[in-house]
Length: 193
Image (cartoon, rainbow, N blue to C red; front, side):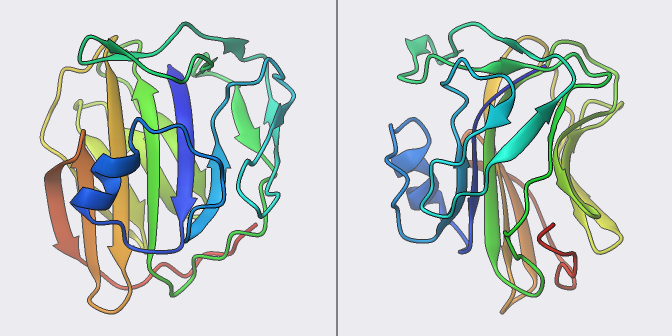
């Protein structure tokens, strides 16, 4: 599948926050932005963190540059995307983003190439955002998973946001700014490595 505009925030993003930046060209100094990888570079060796935190990652496998991203019939200002083969391509070795016991949000644009497969989009320790074989999308950590309804999203771009509020335990999943799932769970306890 393809991935674009991966962002990690050390805050719980609200729908208005998500809407205001989901297609925005960001400069990386936004308040609460812990990591930002836009994949606009032709570099397929290093995932460059454009936030002020320098959490660069090593790209492993042989991903290729993807096509221009389109959503809702509007061309995105972000022309670079990475295409991962689903077998051995991934970004690894990103450290320094501590989410344990904290509120956070993770957002990413994805385009899935095939239905009925398990495809991890982003992950750290036991935290993950993933497409499931039943065609739902999940936000998992702390031994539990929050899953969306089933979407037949093959070859379509969608903006996914997963938020966790440490003060309330609320875990929410958004698809294109619309809340698609919510539950209450214990805090994430993984490391930032």
